[in-house]
Image (cartoon, rainbow, N blue to C red):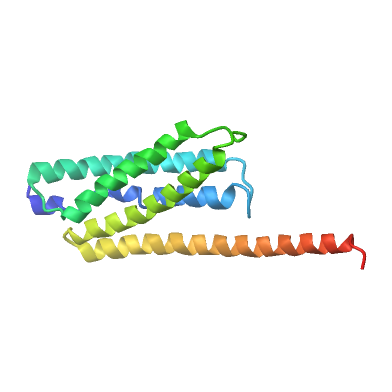
Length: 184
């Protein structure tokens, strides 16, 4: 098999660029506010787990192909893919490090988990676009992944807008109720 035909990135590697953002959106928009969904945590873990597993398989395939067929992968993408893998693995291990809700250091854990999670999403997207540039048919892959990101972005924008509207309505209701019980 010719090495140039193997340069197309495997779909599993792009899975963590799709599944992980969906898992983040589930945690952000369905945990408490603006919509409460009891099963949000199970679905968050499921999407993160599937995305991590398929992404790791893709990462492993990429390493094997690079070593076996001496494919050209830019140094920036190679380094970034290692950073992504390490950070994503740390995020996945967070489920074991998660303190109980009443623990005093729980807030620190939440800050770390959110910050690293959003940073990993940015790194993954950057890494995917770097990898796509090294492929044959790069334009098609860029458009395909760009459409996926666009759809996810529009969904996130709609949910964020809904969250903002609900937040303002709730704030106005609280303000109205607090004014009812104050004497002029």
